Image (cartoon, rainbow, N blue to C red; front, top):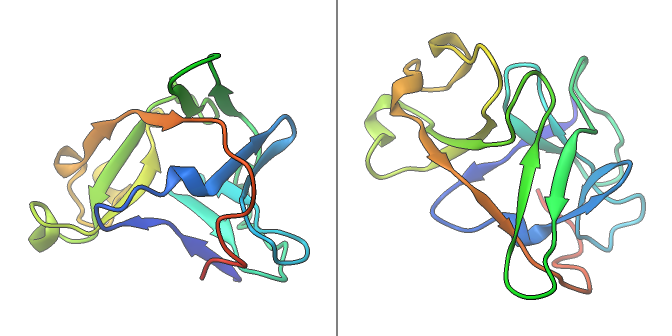
Length: 142
C-alpha cells in the first residue's frame, strides 16, 4: 500500500493542506499532487508522490474549511460520523507526554484498538485552524 500516515511532532501540519470542494490535498508542486484522506479507523494520511493509491474504504471527501475575511478559520472532517474535530494520539504509551502524535479525525466509535498506543484516552482533542495561503509548501512530502 502506497500511503503515509501524518504524525505530529509538535509541528503544525495543517498549513501544508489545501482544501478543495472535491477533496483535500497537500500543497505541493509534484506532478499529480498528494491527496489527503481519512482511513476507516480515523487516521489522517496522504498519498505518496506520483501515486494516487488511497487505502480501501478511506474517505477523500467530507473535509470542511471556513475562511473568514480576516484571521483564522476552521478545518475539519465530517465523514464516518465525525462532528468535525481532530485528535492527536501518541504513537506509543511511552510517547504520551512527549510525542510524537498521530492525527486522527474524531470519528464515531473510535476505540483503543484504533489508536497506536492502544489507549484512546491518551489522545488530545484539538481544533485545526486554517488561513488563506498561496503557493506550494514543498515539492513533495514523504
